[in-house]
Image (cartoon, rainbow, N blue to C red; front, side, top):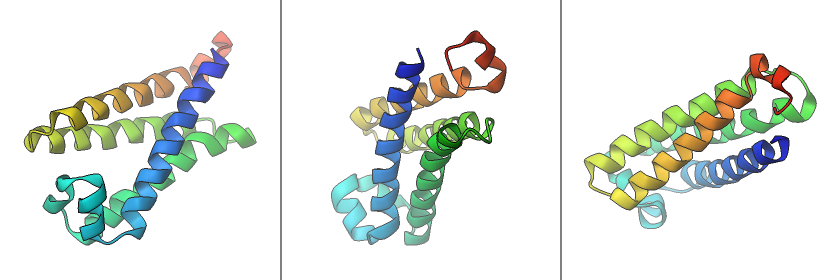
Length: 128
């Protein structure tokens, strides 16, 4: 189970680092061209803030576990990712972009799985 949690964490970190970096370091027009039309609804500053938030959450998902400190940061970061995915799912639902909506729901469920199983209270079960 520990291996499964690390694999899921790695997938989420990879996705959110790439996604956040593309939002943070590209202009709005390029984000619209590469990531989708959803960015038309947001300002450049909002897109950059979202990108920065995704990068911070991705790093907080894995760094505390690697260094053995801040045990509550990892599940809180996973919960933050789930909240970001709820917002993304709402945006895609509003725009009738259903394939992206399904992807958002899947990422949200993975993040909630990580949040639940990495809580320090759950670690005495010897799978986190």
